[in-house]
Length: 166
Image 1 (cartoon, one colour):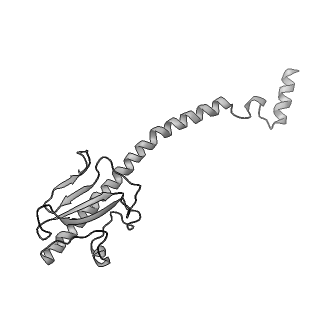
Image 2: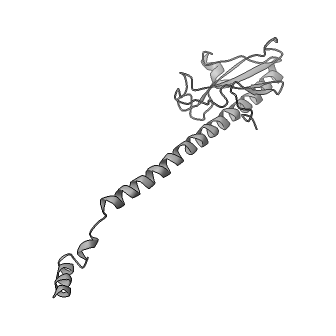
Image 3: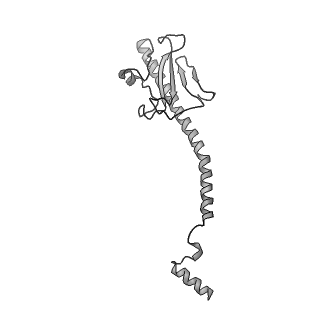
């Protein structure tokens, strides 16, 4: 009689045995704990990749702007200093942000100034400053800080890491 009663209950539940209707609380908590552990491991790694990708974007912007500065130098016999406070005409020629979509989505604010001890006609120093108020203020690069590149070919950074430039 017990077998017949189980079969009748299974038929009443749409063919599903009575004990297999869902997950227990322990099973759900175990799955939640595993997912939380995976998430705790994945988020810092993702953040590190994101910072490195934006750093590469800033380096590419410095290299591109140095090419533009050298072109300007070959035509005018001096480099041009610029910053985010420069007139709009200079910003069109030398953008002061690192991203492709304008300053709002960029990670670095870029400026060009004379190298220390030299005039702007002799040497230009490009500096990419992360996360200022004029670009994405939430972006910070604690490893490298401010990236720099001069017309003499010197590359540098203000952070403690020695691997900031390839």
